[in-house]
Length: 148
Image 1 (cartoon, helix red, strand yellow):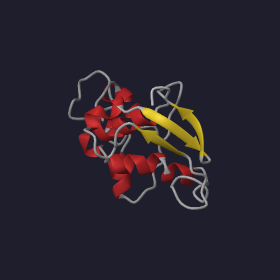
Image 2 (cartoon, helix red, strand yellow; image 1 turned 180 degrees about the horizontal axis):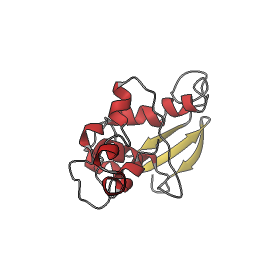
Image 3 (cartoon, one colour; image 1 turned 45 degrees about the vertical axis):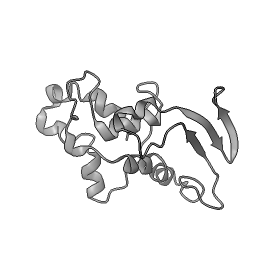
Image 4 (cartoon, helix red, strand yellow; image 1 turned 60 degrees about the horizontal axis):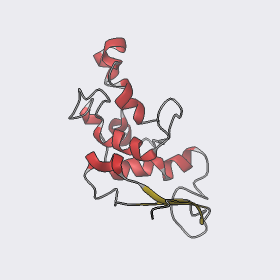
């Protein structure tokens, strides 16, 4: 699933598919409550490739037109922790790679990022402003912000 689409499609979904059907789209929280494993990703170039923007979209569900400041279908909001799990361990599971990536454990690939803020502690409205300081792939630094 691509959570960024919820804040994009939420601008027009009710008009085109009706309010009843719209309530069942991007049903992140309902799916989690049913014990479904949801895996998040991006749909670049249709939507930004940034998991950070996707996490904020899943948590706040504020549409891009600003018409849903409390969230489009707010009962489908999820926590930052649940969004992180969907982007990491659940995404690895969906790719049949859960034994080698998706969590930080001995024997796994050690793919991870360092962020300039604790995404679990920051105001959800500021998640979009978080910067990646460094990216590690297989335990090796693949990217480093020149200002860090």
